[in-house]
Length: 307
Image (cartoon, rainbow, N blue to C red):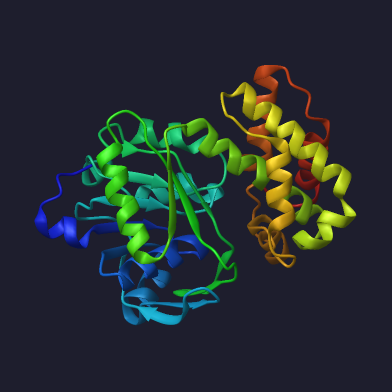
């Protein structure tokens, strides 16, 4: 992370790569709390945000507009960069983040999946890339317009090596912005506990084209089996994930909650199937763990939708 002097420590300089449902919400919340935020996006989206800021319509935070700077490519150093693009867009989007400009900044990837962390560490060797996850239901309805549907937004950050002070600084900024933050010293559990839940939510809701409440009833056996399969893979990857806890969390989420993968399928966009289900199947193969239910859903969705 770049050295934080008195002015940047009190304000915070953020870049948000991908101001969609997740990135747009966080950019607006951080800007509203006083941070200096630049959204990195394509020309038309960047122009819309530069002109009108980001408008948020939220059950939790109310409706508000936050002024946010925008650019197509990072040109000035920042303290932290939130990477919030879809996994399917990551490779192309990273051209907006030149390694020489990123330098030693803190990079916080809030993507679905687990494999992107190592990719980012290889691309940005001077930066501090941490494992992190977010739980939220939020979507972009137009450039610079975000609808936040869930009554929560929570981020979990993993501390590894010497990243403690940087992670603590970021946690404070997010907390001031209204985001619930948990800090863990177990990166594998941070990543795989989210993926265990997300795999079931994404694959089941997308295959059934139904929200969480209906899936809980209609696909109960597959839900329990899939969570058990992914939890077993998570354990082999060094994570402490209890299948019963994940099923309990699934049972507690709002009845009408949809997955981002389900929304992508409804809109004809590419699915993050490879980053979510594909990552589970690949890890299972490395550990010689059978995941028949997960594999069946991955194969079915791969045949039905563009990935």
